[in-house]
Length: 223
Image (tube, rainbow, N blue to C red; front, top):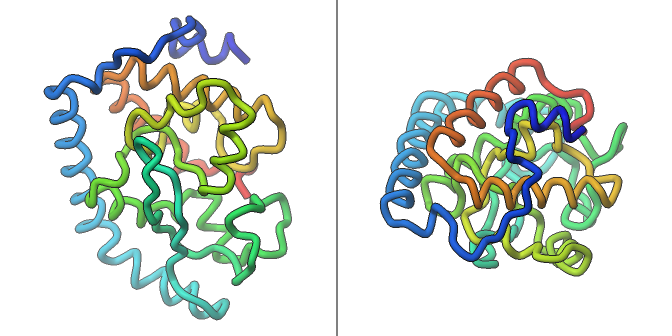
């Protein structure tokens, strides 16, 4: 597994400290925010403007409930925000604490398609435009799950030094979907720390490029 990662990011498994990070510099903050604003505006105007009405019809046709699923998630500096997604499940009381699994009966047919190609995440460009999220960054977790992971992993809170992202380094390197083993979340956090410590505009562009490739092909292990 490490050989595969090092093929793309040779310094990935070097221990890193997070006392000072590139995004502490104002010029880098402005550059990243400028990219986030431009990219999210483009997505909202040219994609979400027609995608939302289309998917709203499909979601409402298949099951009762709202078009959007709103969930409290943990953002930068442990501030909670309301994450926006297309609803992919029937209404249930375990959406914040129980992850979707293979053949999960809560997931609708439309929802399964949206999840496979990550289309359910598209409304999060609204979160990006609002400033709650970034296009690229550590993926945000639901608040109850975040509290559990904090207790299990040392320095977990370091991933909250920056805004969470729609996509991230961990996701393009294969860590998407259900967290069924402890090593999966530990590896995700390790990759998040690497990204934060080694952020660059080129790294963001690389992650976005690889994300687009994965959106086209879909992933069978995302439920």
